[in-house]
Amino acid sequence: MSTINLMDTPRPLWLKIVDWLTTIPMVIAFGTTLVLGDIAARIARLFGLRPMEIAVGAAQRALIWTFRISGVRLTIERHPAVVAGKGFVFLSNHQSLFDVPIFGGILFSNYPKYVAKKELANWIPLISFNLKHGGNVLIDRGNRVGAVRAIAEFGATCQERDVSAVIFPEGTRSRDGNLQEFRKAGTAVLLDAASSLPVVPTAIDGSWKLLINKMFPVPFGTSVKIRFHEPIERGEGDAGTLIDASLATIATTIDEWRADPQ
Figure 1: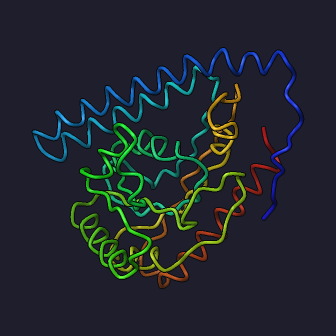
Figure 2 (figure 1 turned 180 degrees about the vertical axis):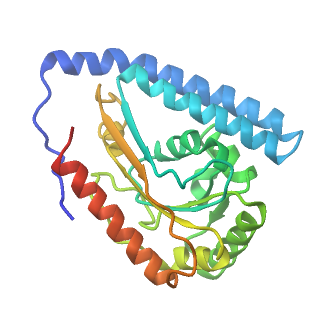
Figure 3 (figure 1 turned 180 degrees about the horizontal axis):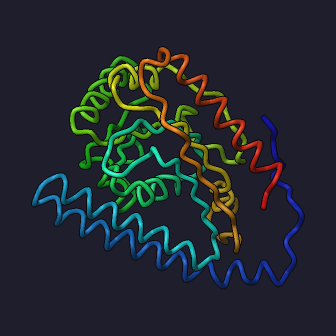
């Protein structure tokens, strides 16, 4: 797996000015969408979980559109077998807090649910409300037994409802874009609990650059790529084998992108 250096070619002054001029309206639009989406999700929840899921998905798709203000180029490659309206386990690397709305907007009709740390449930409009009330699982890393039980229950529920589970086996986002070691335990529990949901190895690259300056500014014209590979049907290996195969696929994909950045 190749690595990259944060110290890319210095940006010219004119481009730094563009970064700031576009970041300010993008942040305003992004924040406004979060707040309005949060309100919409709370109202929709009064009518049930599915209406809330639709409201959250629509808001997250709108969040993706706000990236365009900063010239963000999102390239999506989706295998034809990753069909709408079906549950999968998306096993992905993780580079940014923006990965969640990106997944949520792209996988709108797959109703993606997340394995997330409990700290994210308290301070982000829309995202935190969805994590707490939208069928996701929030884990306490200091309580391993409780986390394992919660992930197992989460996987079983996703399978029963035929909705999708998203897990980032690295455990935390990569702030420099380099792929980190996968922590297999929680992922294995999820795969065992959702034993009939196909596994989709998923690679994302470039989203880390959106926060390279802690969002102020967002580099104009950042390219973000995401690829949903062919689903792996269950019965093609145990959980450990599936995780290793997914890691290899993700690493190969990122190497391919960086070898040909166009």
